[in-house]
Amino acid sequence: MALKVVTLVGGVGGAKLAFGLAQILPPDDLTLIVNTGDDFWHYGLRICPDLDTILYTLAGVVDPANGWGIAGDTTQVLEALRGYGEDTWFRLGDRDIATHLLRTAWLREGVTLTEIAARLAARLGVKPRVLPMTDAPVATRVDTLEYGELEFQAYFVRHRWQPTVRSLRFEGIEAAAMTPQVEMALRQADIILVGPSNPWLSIDPILAVPGLRQLIESRPVPRVAITPIVGGRAVKGPAAKLMLELGYDASMKAVSCYYGDLLNGFVSDVVDSLEGVIQPHAVAFETVMESDNHKIELAKAVLEWIQCWGSV
Ligand code: FO1
Image (tube, rainbow, N blue to C red; front, top):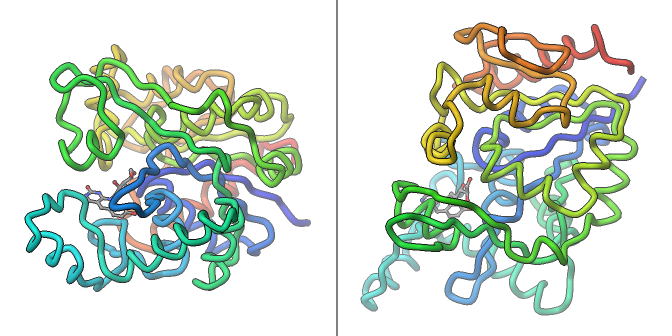
């Protein structure tokens, strides 16, 4: 029987799990709810890094080395901007710019981000549903010791997430609302997954959309996160450093505690023991996905494990 799987994702780790799930689930049974707190305006173009990373990954065109952008993309525009004396700290590829041009033009026509993601997915041949967490503009702001408050991409890319983080906030989140598509997907989900994404930077913005966390917590279905921390370290990005700066241990147990009763299941990595995991269902798999096959194996193992105990 069809199992509707809804996965909250942001960043490269989340995209890897999404890829694995997309290879084993019928497209109609997989919905991705994507963080939009990283989105920003750059040279007048609306950039949506997490949406594009998911779309490019599921389309099989993502740059494998970075996990974002388009494989083999060129940087003629970037070099021309540098020729004008611009500081090209955010590496936009030429083909990637086509995505931003289309999205920006559609936004100007009043098309919603949800509809834009659907159009781009259709044109890229991506069949699972890719849903922005909200259609309202939300911007993650990072308050740092060295520079004060930074836009997310200034923190993450320009300053290579080296500044010391004091706090985070999601500008515009109070006025944001779940789209009907997000609400319906969560209401109809048989399984809700939280990808191995940064809980503070990629998942919290999604959970902060008014009513979204409560809706997930109210669902009597398996609600499972895959750890983004392995052996006390982030697989990629600032998660471990950020945890220490925010006063947590850099451990998968601390992630388990942080998510708390949002979840009833937790997947840690085999290098970490399960004691300290507070969710009633816990398992350890090899969660570091280095190959496409590994992404598929992890997705398969997680779903099979859930079906052993899920109330589905
Ligand atoms: N990340 C970087 O570390 N450096 C970049 O120059 C960069 C450019 C970029 C362009 C388009 C895009 O969709 C993503 C890009 N990213 C870059 C990744 C992005 O900053 C992160 O993937 C998310 O915002 C956080 O996961």
